[in-house]
Amino acid sequence: MKITPFLVMEVLERAKQLESLGEHIVHLEIGEPDFDTPEPVKESAMKALNEGDTKYTHSLGKWKLREDIAHYYWRIYNVNISPDQVIITMGSSSAMQLVFSALLERGGEVIISNPYYACYPNFIRYTGGNPREVKVYEENGFKYPSEELNKMLTNKTKAVVLNSPANPTGCVYSKEELREISQLECYFVSDEVYHGLNYEGRDHSILEFTDKAFVINSFSKKYAMTGWRLGYVIVPPKYIRYMQVIQQNLFISTNSFIQEAGRAALKYCDHHVTYMVKTYNKRRLYLLERLNKMGISTQVKPTGAFYALANVKEYSMDSYSLAFEILEKAKIAVTPGVDFGSNGEGYLRISYANSIDNITEGMDRLESFLST
Image 1 (cartoon, rainbow, N blue to C red):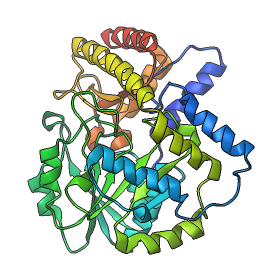
Image 2 (cartoon, one colour):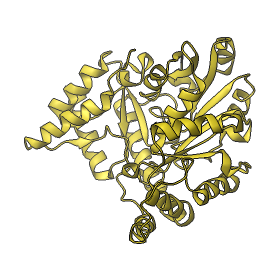
Image 3 (cartoon, rainbow, N blue to C red):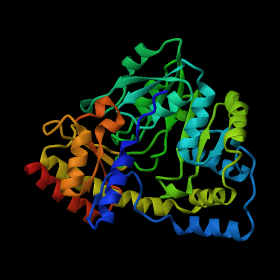
Image 4 (cartoon, rainbow, N blue to C red):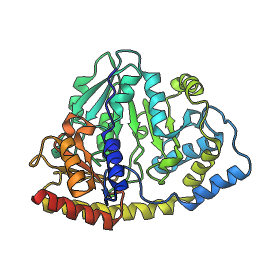
């Protein structure tokens, strides 16, 4: 079984080594909010701990949190789901493992875009399946051409993976694009963990258009809760019991008191998210302006998540070596595009989940490096 390295972590680990030697590194590689977790979330977790909420929960998760999530999808997307369709997970990664374990038998195929989130192929292979890649291009906003998707469906196809807003591209599918894709005769695995981080419109869930979907979401990005490891998956009813059994065997249940923190995020943190999104957008616009001046911005600007791809094909078609050369010489940590598939080669992913001062310093260093 082929499992590929997660290159962003290799960049981060080398950056940490350099920092231990006294170097000042500008971190633009990691996909982690630089904001602290909102106070209502922390207060709720502490309250739950102080009240002794430290036992196993139902394997699907606490009923009240699942109710809150169902209400959230009704409030935000006008989608009616039952709390019985929600499984609370330890972040989105365990949600992916549950979904692909339930969907795939050996030889089953899952269609993914290329570039893709680096872990998708590894999860698919780990659960016995085969990833089938559709190359997507910057001139089309790195989005699936729906006619290509239809041609790729076979009797081995188990699902199509959607990721909007997308990592690493920052692309966001419109309502019309999602509706068109939803007409395909297959299941969908919709990674919606960057929902809420949309700067030029509003997010749409695949559940608005089809019920043949596994929707993966998380509290990590929107609520700055990466270390809390709290996510969930919304599941078609026919798969609930099967995935519950997998959850029981692999994970038993998600941490009890952290589920209370998730309830607080959904109930009390809308204004915290509004502030974070406003701040991210200022950084996004500044970063895109700098990349454009350097001549390395993509043809279609990213409008979601907190990433931009820099097109550095003029400088190198070995993004791995280039990223480490930039790290060693310019002291900027960026992620090589090849981490996200062969069609990410020639790009660098730059995260703007950092302060405007650090982004400015990083862009000054990058501009100086490229000029030489």
